[in-house]
Length: 321
Image (cartoon, rainbow, N blue to C red):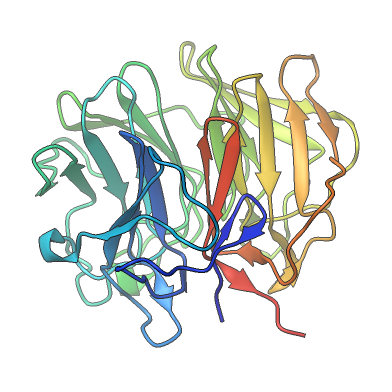
């Protein structure tokens, strides 16, 4: 069973378009809209539902400005994909990998033009990476998309190593692929997060490896996109629970806010909300104290999107006791 929340507040959707509850979807913020795509619902393992929430106007928990875009969805049924918006690429949402059911030969990269409202499959060139699900994805100021980790199997057309720590780089301007360095990279894993800092370094947090071990958050991995080198950092402050299936957003003040996650299959972590201060060296964890937490709340399969000073947590799996 799934629910939808906005920054830890329950949403009741009563607008003309009422999306199905879901998890393992993607969310992309552009032009004051959060675009949602795909995922798994209570009745469908794969969907291609496409809709957006308009955050340019005031709204509350009893009325959401949701708009249906299903009539222009030209992407296959999907879940467990990754989406990213490049700040220097106008009007484009890129969607990478994921499960496409029997469409395992589908393109690796799709792009949606938010102005023309057109989907395009990227006519990518070069040595293409294997399709993966649950990858961590960011885009730098040069419009290069960095794709790390993820899992694969024959169901998505990949017979190579199930868990990956391959770092693939997609050049959106040329539609070409290259490989980043994996010297000193984290172990092969999935269900972690990637956050790009203004200095060009990517912070990788958590995940789960091939042996079912959840990665400790007291150590984070950093990839320098300018030098193409890896480093790891032992954090200070609180010692958060190891986890995967969490989300992470970067605030304007340079803090990474982590929400949700599990530390065993379908077992929520006790410390659902975390703050990592990247302004200090080494980075420092704190566990914020908040006055209200919805119960039940999603803990995996959700998305988190930063809009101004608000983190919008949408859909996801809840634990029924």
